[in-house]
Amino acid sequence: MQKQNKIKESMQEVFQCTGCALFAAQLMEKELAFLLLIPEIKTKLKLPSEENIQNAIEKLNKMTFGTLIRKLKGEAAAVIDTASESLLQEALDERNFLAHHFFDAYQGKLDDLKIHEIMRERLSNMREIFEEIFDGLHKENFKIMKAMGICDEEGELLPD
Image 1 (cartoon, rainbow, N blue to C red):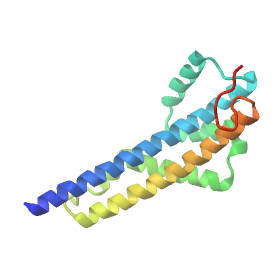
Image 2 (spheres, rainbow, N blue to C red):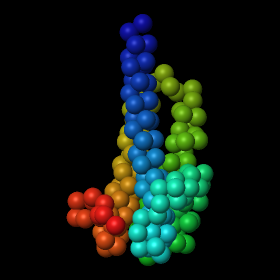
Image 3 (cartoon, one colour):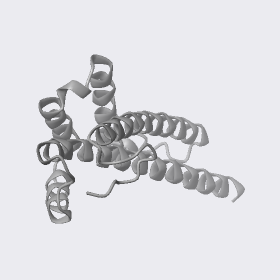
């Protein structure tokens, strides 16, 4: 019975790590989607209306991460260097694996505590990749918004 409790507790840790990785992936995707709103902001030299932002976000939310990356390459190519493109591709591969195959890859082995450790390590690595991309995209968004006079040094929106 004690082994079953250890397995249950260990799987709870795996699920917690999964949640953290998924959360980081969602933040990364949202930051990428926001970056894709910038061309509209640039053409109007001000923030779009809340309704326009919502419409754009709804449209972007329906796109897969891969589609968002392709759109980024087309619309904001100046932001992506070769290293960033490689990291984005790795993030896409990891995000897709996490969303569609992660638990299947360990099916039949979920009662093995050593496998749980491998799973947690993989999830931690995924989260770090997603956070690295989020940080880079967030800094780029901030730099652009600041240069356009939309926000101040602290990231607070400036009045129209």
